[in-house]
Amino acid sequence: MSATTAKTSGRIVGSMLLLAFLVYGGGSLLAISATGEPVVLADVLGAEGRLTAGVLLMLLNSAVVIAVGVAAYPVLQRHHPLTASAYLLTRGFEAALLAVSAVLLLSFVPLAQEFNTSGDPSVAAAARVVHETSLDAYWVAMIGLSLGSLLFCRALFRTRLVPRALAGLGFVGYALLATGGALELFDHNVGVLLSAPGGVFEAAVGVLLVIKGFPEVQNQDLPAAGTPVPAARLRSPAPA
Image (cartoon, rainbow, N blue to C red; front, side, top):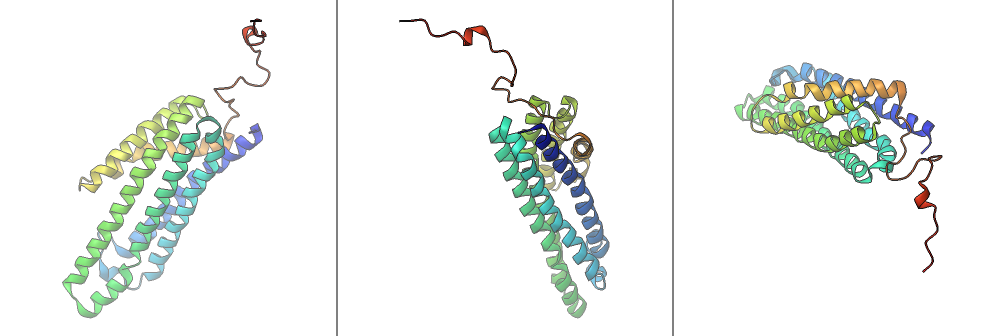
């Protein structure tokens, strides 16, 4: 892989990391403004447009998430093939579950209409189940992301594709994110707090890669072009 190709791949990864913040964050804010937090079905009526726009932005985020894995793949594959595949697969897993989490929110529209007509408490109970299922899908997605990203940060650290201190921050951040996601599934509301270091890492590495891209790092298992080969490796085998 040429230095130009590595830089371009890095800039795409960085751009997609930053874009994911914008589209998912914007989509979440729109969806919450339409449904309330916690969900109030009466608020959904008249806010269907905002809810739909929010869900569409969150679905766009799933495409962006996959693009991160695809753009990072050729760089990682050269140095750590297993990490490259694992990172791409976990980004796909994350994208799929985040899409499920987003689409579930659209069911609030018919539930709100039914509740407005009948006032049946069971409809409100169904809305709570939908909301909890959407949140669980989100946190399982974060756990999947974290597992793949731990390998990603390990590769970044070993190859110095980014400064080692930044790769170390990512490793710690994703470990905390996985822990927070698991605790959220057991009703311990610490996930948002524990996701902060991982968010800082993604923002910082996103800005760095947009500016510099990935450096051209030689495969650690092969001598770089122009590197002198030890004389012992140049000698012909001794005659039998």
